[in-house]
Length: 133
Length: 119
Image (tube, rainbow over all chains, first blue to last red; front, side):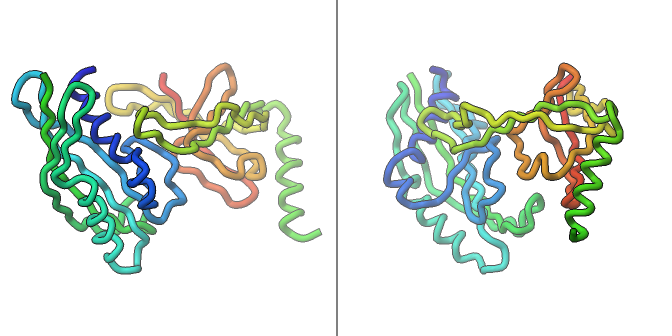
């Protein structure tokens, strides 16, 4: 398995765990359709845009779009960001012949989504490094 | 008979009266039941709901999307034939299969859909 596929699978594995599913936050990856009726969900994008320690390693950022219902204040975004922190910040995933380490997070408010004005959007970001051998 | 029923009946009659201007379109409806993050795959229904409906081709446009050419076909359907269109639906007619593009206009009686396929 290559470094990109391994990185993706390592990060995605967090969102398939029972504890994450118990958070009841609808979670989808990028390039996925089927959330048109949702009023609150997150969309996970793993972007390995940086260089790694060696040729089998990579680094980059995980961008998570947080969508909540427009007009009800931003509180839900902050709550979801804190729940994401609990599962992602400082975590290390050892699988698929590599180790994916996640750093600290940040988020920014985007505003009303241009594609669906019923949703209010924020972007939660967390850098990662993936170490392969 | 109320106005709604009257208009729906007239819309159905219009599709009959145009004869072979209305072509047979095989509509295959699939639904997404979720995404599995452990296998990194979207799960689609394995047995699509298939039915043959009538559609009237309004226009065809050849367009470019980045580095590929696509064929856009605008078609009219009876709204009752495609009540809940989704991005997973496919439309097959004249030997080719199309997906649903934007925009989709539905006045409750007729639906004008833009269908797309790579060329």
